[in-house]
Length: 208
Ligand code: PRT
Ligand code: MG
Image 1 (tube, rainbow, N blue to C red):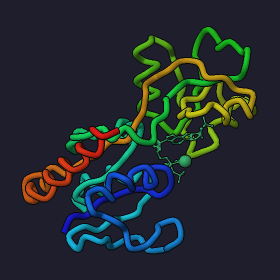
Image 2 (image 1 turned 135 degrees about the vertical axis):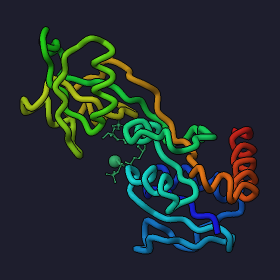
Image 3 (image 1 turned 135 degrees about the horizontal axis):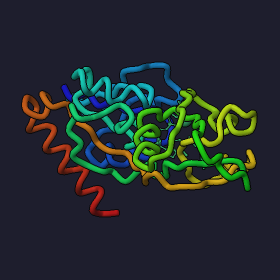
Image 4 (image 1 turned 180 degrees about the horizontal axis):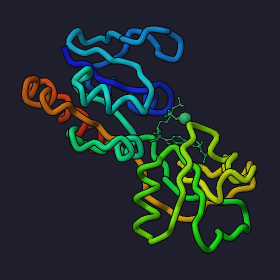
């Protein structure tokens, strides 16, 4: 049995064509079902539906053989213990700094609100900027509006969320897409099945 970890929402939706072209159609819709383990039309493949931030953990410990996760999540988690054989080019966005419109950042130490603590720490350290990182779990956009932080580090797609809150994108930290990750032991033990699936995903990717 091959177990694939995916999160609900945009990653699931955009990963579905890859899975379907490999003959993997889940027998339930994760948006409607409360099931956390979904069987599929291939009796050797099941999906586990988990939070996006938990995907690297499940794959690292071998609770899932492979998974699909955003590069943002992989960088923040630290994914040295995983193979990352394929960029699926889905769920694309940009990891950026953002701040209140027309408000220059203070000269000295700045306060940064984000859920990407490690990435933000590394980013500002590389620039030689002293930054106090404030960990949040959501609604980062609120932080500069209420004086909690001078800027945020968050994902931006259309920019609508920033605009709606009188914030503007500032610096691009990196372009983000979702990657296929594979447990290292599974890559050896289940090599045939995983290699075949990888090849199929690559074919789907090449057609785009
Ligand atoms: O939402 P939930 O709390 O359940 O979990 P999650 O946010 O971890 O998962 P999900 O499904 O929202 O995101 C999963 C992955 O999708 C992320 O790790 C990214 O790799 C990728 N992705 C792509 C995005 C976006 N685009 C995106 N726009 N993730 C989040 N957003 C959010 C962003 O944080 C901001 O709040 O959408 C808002 C900005 O969108 P625009 O279009 O207004 O700019
Ligand atoms: Mg989200």
